[in-house]
Each structure stands twice: as structure tokens, then as C-alpha cells.
Image (cartoon, rainbow over all chains, first blue to last red; front, side, top):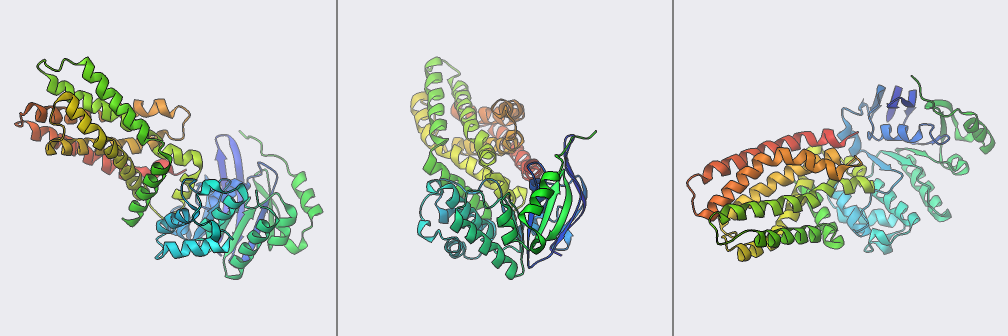
Length: 237
Length: 219
């Protein structure tokens, strides 16, 4: 298993964001996390990415305690958050060279150029990131997240701002990642995109896993019913 | 080490293109130096110590402008998570941020010190003064970077940073002012005592900041 979570809970003050979540996933697959706003998707992704420490439960990634060995885990994961982790003053290539150096790549210039080529931004390599549209910034962030060939891709609503060719590119990147033996976990509010892209769909509600099924067995109607039935997270004493 | 250099390179390149902080730091430094030059009687005895005090007030307050935003900018843009997710430890990130802050302060000092020397007619370009200025600036950048990580998440960080930083900066400031003043006075008998104190506090602050930085920026 690439990731194994058992009984993971996370609270922010009195607010429970996750309640005793069990989640396992292995390489060679794409997993979609669905749920209404506030269901706990982003918290779960942040714990998967070692950005947030759970209050309770165990999380192992690549066979080790993920929080205690977070630097080892981080070297093998790529994360796309709500906001792109790029610097607007730097060019697209400079951004990737910087992150390539931080990940200790031997040839960050070559890796950066190849990553830009993969997301269709090769012609904009020398343009400042500030000049890119929201969708193109999202592509650049995808290039940054995949620059060091991570085994685990964690993507929080990566389809936001992407046009149709952009979503197609995102889908092919995730499918190719799984074909190479990696694991991609992403959240989305676009149910059709989630069904078409993933192998497995996990639905969260109120900080708990309420449904876990193969994507082949999912329809937009069943997913909408599952999500809408879910209760919002409530504060507990 | 290459990662520390990459972090410094990134911050300086961004500053060179955006000119967000160094211009403001330099303007503030020059305003303080010029204003205090008019306030002090330059013929009176004691101008050496007054001058040393004026120099360090200018360095301290202008340094705060850049250091205070060092981590806050990353947090506001969301890029702090990007840095945390790279496989570097908190100490490496601290050294990168510390190096970039120190470089910004040095750039300002390169312009400000000759102006100070001309206006105050004091040997501000003496190699010993340059060494003291570098050591004092390192203490300011080290402690400032640490506390900018502490305050960067808060709403009133601009107020909180000086409140936390100034009391702890006192030993560094006293040592820096006294050492600088003694060079200006041409009396170098006691100077080693102040320089040792300055370097000692620098070492303590920078080592503590290196060790504690990771805990402060992680969730």
C-alpha cells in the first residue's frame, strides 16, 4: 500500500473536520474524493500530503509513519492545492528550476523544460508566471507537482479553472501516473470528470467516509444522491 | 547548501524584479540618518556615541520592513506550503530566509554607510565598523526571521513582530552600539568585550532559530 490510514481524526478547535477515517490505496490507481463543501476532503488531502498532522489515528505512507518521516514522504509526493505554489515574478522555467533544486534534481533545467513540455507550456517557458491565465497557472502548478516524478500525487480540485483541453490533459497526466505504478488522489466537484478519470470513488460526509465504490459502478445520479444525503459537519462537545 | 543558495537566489531575484522592500528600506534608512544628523549637535562632545546610536536605529527599523514580510509574503501567497512540501528541513528553510534577509540589509547598508560617513564625519567605512555592522545585522536577520515565522499567521503581525523582537534584540543592539561607538571614538581598549558579546548573542540566536524554525512553520 502506498497510503494507509486507520482511525484518523482531525479537529480544529471544537470543530471536527475528520472522524475516524480509514483509507487505503495502492499504486497503479486513481482515487477521487467527493463530498459537499465542508465534508473533510481538503483536510484528508492535507493529511495525506503531510501538511496537517492528525489528532488521532495512524497514517503510514510508503510503509513508514508519514508524520515522523515526513521529509522522506515529501520527497516522493507531489501536491496541488487550491492556490498554485508558483512565484508570479519568476518565469515559468525559473519556477520549475527553483523547485527542481529544492528537490535535489541533478538537472533541474532539463527537468523543468520537460515538465513544461508535458503540460503544453514549453512556448511560455520564459514568460513570467504573472502573465498566465488561471487555467495556465494551474497547468504550471501541475508541472511543478510532477517535476520530481513523485509516486504519490495529491490534488485538491485540480480541474478548477481548466478548460476542456486542460481537463483532458489533467486526466491523461493522472492516468499515465497510475499506468506507471503511481497513486493519484484528487478531489473534484465535477462528478462526470471524477467518474471518467478515477478507478475508485470515495465519498465523504461530515468528516466520515460514507461511500467507497469502483468508478465503473458509479453514476452521476447515485453520486449526487450520496453527496446530497450527507449531513454537514457539526460542532461536538 | 545548494538548497540554501536556491532559496536565497529565489528571494533576491523576486526582490530585484518587484522592488517591494529594498527601496522602502533604503528610503527609511536615509530619512532616519539625515533627520538625526540635523537633530544632533555634531560639534559637541559625544557625537561618536550619538552617531553610533543613530546608525543602529536606522539599521534596526529599516531591517524590520524587509524581515517582517519575509515569511508573511510566502504565507499570503500560499507558497509557504510549497516550500514545506519540498524535502528540506526547517533549518535549511531558515538559513535560506535568513540569508536573503541579511543580503537585503547589506544592500541597504552599502548605500547608507557612505552617506552616514559623509554626513556625520565619522569613520563608518572603517573595516572594524563594517565587521560590527555585519555581525549586528546577522543577529537582526536571524532573530527577525525566527519571529517573522511566529507572527506571519496572525492578523496583527506588523505590531506583534517588534513587540517580540525588540526586547530580545537589546543585548545585540547594546553590544553593536557600544562597539561601533568605541571605534568612532578611536578608543579600542574595551572593544573586544563588546564584539565578543555581539558574536556570542548572534551565535545563540541563530542556532536557536535554526533548530526551532521547522516547528514554527509546520501545522
